[in-house]
Image 1: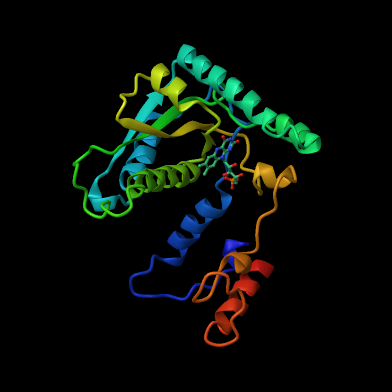
Image 2 (image 1 turned 45 degrees about the vertical axis):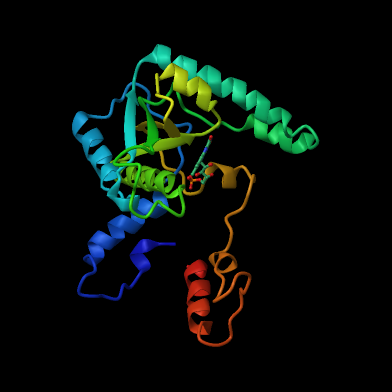
Length: 249
Ligand SMILES: Cc1cc2nc3c(=O)[nH]c(=O)nc-3n(C[C@H](O)[C@H](O)[C@H](O)COP(=O)(O)O)c2cc1C
């Protein structure tokens, strides 16, 4: 979608159209980055502070702010993380051995940029922070981890606004990483992120370009009033047409 083509309606509390364009541009042009890192170009302290401060201002269940950010530059540490990736990647390749074509395609994908990026960040979740009672977490314990994911998304978008690429690497052994980074038993690692300036932000996800999976249509993931109802003739029909229109742009 071309953001510039949008004719935004205004509301007294909305951001100016220029500000909204900036936000939507960051959202639509954010990518998961594993290659195209510019090696040797460091992220300045000012930029890194702004990006982490954006993460730290994410919503969190009961305002528990249960995140920590372990900043990792040391190459020996990163080498150990890369070894964990290689081990887990090989394991995951084997889990596809009943589908040799898909296995071949999967093995050819570049799924991490641990060494090529200029900085790695382990984002963790501490369920004991301000606990054991955390307002709002009593029925759904996962809301703690969800809060950390909100922080990660803030970080990802702020980094995009700063021209910094971020890649999330999840093909890692939690136990290996806890040992490598001396993470205490009660703290859960949520994300391993690789950050750095990049030569480009691709227009589409790498996995879409590689024909791994297509982007779903927005209208196919919206249900009306009940699970599974994708077509609504009554009160939602104008909205449903509007969704189709945005997809045609
Ligand atoms: C929880 C999570 C874990 C992910 N783990 C990996 C990973 O291990 N390796 C990888 O290459 N990408 C990983 N990604 C990135 C996704 O593949 C990527 O977001 C998706 O393909 C869409 O591409 P885009 O982020 O460029 O829009 C992860 C993303 C999320 C949200």
